[in-house]
Length: 304
Image (cartoon, rainbow, N blue to C red):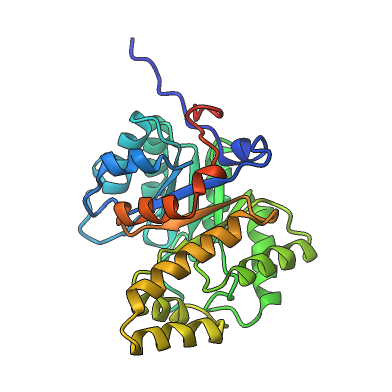
């Protein structure tokens, strides 16, 4: 008889028992090489797995890179959060994907629309993240923890922060229980966002997602995807580029973001978009003394 895989714990179960500790987690790309030796040294509180849908991907969900990597991460003892862009899948194909992830022990789903606000797909089963969330709840009840994206700078397709809060509340009412933000340029913007959510009666946990800045182009990326930006931060990055100091400035700014967020009581944790540059991520976390804050889930909070 084959023993069923025990599922990961839900992220909110971990968060509710953190005390003064913080989650320090990493995002990884399953379509690029993953150095598990360095990942072990980072020892993240959890790993999120990104998802890039394409027309030529295998129909069998067990052969999809995000699913395969999630299975391997769980086998190695990691807590896993799987990103899924709903807009690219039918209800039938999504049901198969979620059943496979459940079989492999995944309990945490990052439910998103995907594809960018400009993308339109005819006869789509999940035109918005809320539709995807409602499907997960109707098909799987409370089995999955549902994480949704938060936009401290306002989503590119949203006209105002008021609208942003309205849509966020709708997704929470549909069944989402945790927010992970997109990248910002300044720590104050993250903390202001937490306060704005509280003022709008949104009290679910928020994990602050941050880009690991490596060059001036990373500041440009954040600028492009934000309706409102911190102009002084962007200006400083541009000046560093002109002085041929962009690499040093980018690394310094990433350290600053992490330090400022970790020391705040408003922070549940920080989630680093590594782009699979694990060596750099490990070095930056070491330089910021992040382990002084980090919850070691493998020791104190078992992931199963």
